[in-house]
Length: 386
Ligand code: SF4
Ligand code: SF4
Image (cartoon, rainbow, N blue to C red; front, side, top):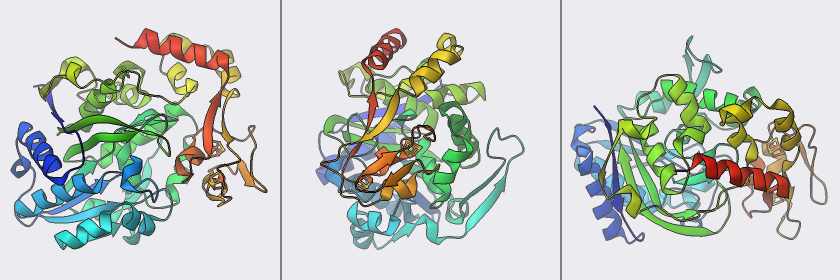
């Protein structure tokens, strides 16, 4: 049987419009009652990357969260809503609008770091045989991934599967980048995690989203709500909307190798709106050549070229924007950033995780690629896209 992915158009965050779109999307995949039973504890694992206002398009919008919270309550469930952010989760809960929504719904806004970590041992895992996740994730009856549709400097795309990374509490997330320093290993690590922390269903906020970066950038209307029981399939559809072919996405490649269902478009049944009606033309992508090359089998073998280009695609600071908060220094997993007057990068140490770009709340760090890099990137995209 094919994996259903629902696409429903939604133009803005007007609460009535969001209510109607989210309900329709869930009905298209069988209805919320299929997943949530009376007295079930339901964790809505939203994306609160950094403390950022909802209109910045980086974090799951509170209107979407509110509708989902209401639906959980209507179905007799007990909602818990939260995340473990890249930094300052408590502040993120407030700034991103979750605390206010939870007050209105009389439910818990949760910092996943405030629950003791639970050890999971998985002998089948490729990178993370032993992993620690917030114990709340394992104590709830229903786990819902509620991601934002975004591009990503390291992984090209971030959606329902990568959203599970926030179940790893606090600074441990940064250490994971050290454990899996390249795109291929990090994809395997994320699939190890997803295999053990698999959402019951996914509901994606693809209404207004940041372009060109997973962190701070300009926003663009995509205008969709997506839902699916299969997070991998949902990501395949979501990434297609912004112009990525599934075969170039490192995370999708890793999932396919492990035999997960729903990595190919022909294993997916789209219900609701047609894909061609919601595709966005030339959605800005970060200039991350390495993941694209690693995901292209024949280029994957050309290590010399990869190594050359690797040193040619790097984080750089826009001095005028920098407020010297030192978040980049504190969050770099390999201590490749030192903030003196401005951040200074040690490119010999840098592992190109781009956590510094994602975590900078004023968008002062960008990925810089040379013109040669950009030409290669465009050529690869052209080859990969249908
Ligand atoms: S680059 Fe960004 S994160 Fe780093 S010190 Fe400046 S403002 Fe802070
Ligand atoms: S400098 Fe930035 S991209 Fe490089 S390893 Fe540190 S956080 Fe990652």
